[in-house]
Each structure stands twice: as structure tokens, then as C-alpha cells.
Image (tube, rainbow, N blue to C red; front, side):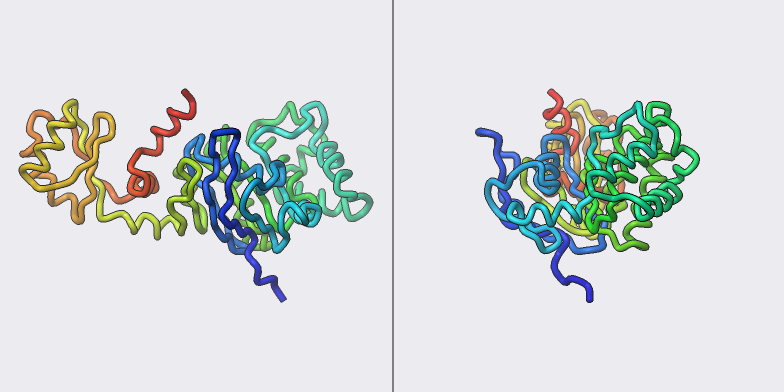
Length: 316
């Protein structure tokens, strides 16, 4: 009989580095056997949350339960059932693929026929069998990521955590990564939790949670979240955004938002408004674009600012 408890349960989770609040009252449940993504710009709280879930940071306030076990009191039970793939490389580049797996196996007390069978299966599943005696330093970024996955799955965890797994991968390597993740979910019943700042990657998840400045502002399936945005999105590029906004308010009784040199509107049947908006904006308009809601539109709708704005803030 399957365990009815959630794979992950967070209750009013809070974490601060001195005066900086990284997580501010995060509560959430993640079901077993789903692919769940924490989406947010750099600085939004993803890294802190990942470190807490992977047992690298102690809980300051609130509660974390993984696979029915509470942190930190049952951390040993959690670690036996948890697989982790960090964003930073953890491979020894001077060792071969197989030697890296052997060192990982030693940490979990795996040896003999059991270990050999698991290695063979993983190397085949991840298309690494012909690379087993090759040094890691000779592999491409995509192949190295596969070896990281093999390490994380060697002890057959029930829950797999991946921190920004697609960073630095080309489109082909990303496609291979996701093919394997879907295999883990569908064939082996593994619960998979990722962090990412890539909007297009979040579209692949069963459900996502959008993080903004340490808070969860939205949770749900990608299509469900996009459906919460009020209609189509219409974006006007202009060098005079304030003048355009004032004209739209005065002439058409609309309530646009400004983002740098663009003006944004959410409107049902937005394409029908284009001729009227073009007439009102006049020569101040450089371009106008109509589209269906995206996850960035969801982010804007929930936070009032653009996704990339926080990326710039975090890197400056």
C-alpha cells in the first residue's frame, strides 16, 4: 500500500541571513510521483529553500517533512531516501565515469553484485555505457550532467532534488535530461523537485511554485496559472510610456502598467483593441504585440514587476 503522506510538506518556513530574510512564511505540499518546479529569479529564495530541503541548512523557524520524516530530528532517515544533484559540479574530473560512481556507492555502503547491477542499469538508461572508462574532464557539459544524475540515483532515492539542472546545457542536452526525468517519474515513481529561473523549463512541470522575494506568490499547473491572467496580453513599445499611459486612461478608460520603455495591458480579445490603441498612441508608438499569457505574465500579475528585473537586481 502506497504512503498517503506528501513527498514534501512545508509549514510556515522562515529563514534569514542576519537581517536579510531569504524565506518568509513558505507553506506548501508536494505530492508523491510528480515533477515540481520552484520558479523564480536569482535572489528569490530558491537556493536557500534547496539547501534546507537537501538538509544542508538547519531549520530556523517552521517545519519541513520529507517523505513523512521531519527535519532535523529524522535527518538520517531522510538522507537515505533522498537524491541530490547540485548546480555546482560534484564530479572528480580526473576520475572516470565509473570511478565517480564507485566513490558515491561507498558513501551508501553499496558493493558487490548489487552495485554492479545498479551501475549497469544507470549507465544504460543515461546512455553512458560507452563512456564508463572515460575521464570526466573529457566529457561535454551534457554528459557530465548525466553522470551527476547517475550519482544521485545510484542508491535509488524516492525523492530527487535538482538545483538549476539545465544551466549551461545546450537544447539537445536539456531534451535528454527531461527525457530521463520523465522516465524516473513514469516508470520508477520517483518524486522530482527542481529549482529553475528558466521560464520555458517551468512549462514542463506537473506543478510549479513561483517564488518572489522569499514568498510563494502562486502555485499550480502551468496552464492553470496562465489561465488566471485576465485575458490576452498586449505590449506597446514606446519612448514616451507615461504619455501613452495617460492617453489610454483618458481616451479608452484602460489601466495599463509601465515596464521600462513598454506599456502592458491585460484585455479579453486584445486583438480587437489594436486599431483603437494605435490611433490613441499615434506617433509615440514604436510597436505593438498581442499574445496569450505566459508564465512571465503570471509573475507580473502576481508581483507587479517583471521577472527579469529581479535577475538584474540580483546580479548588480
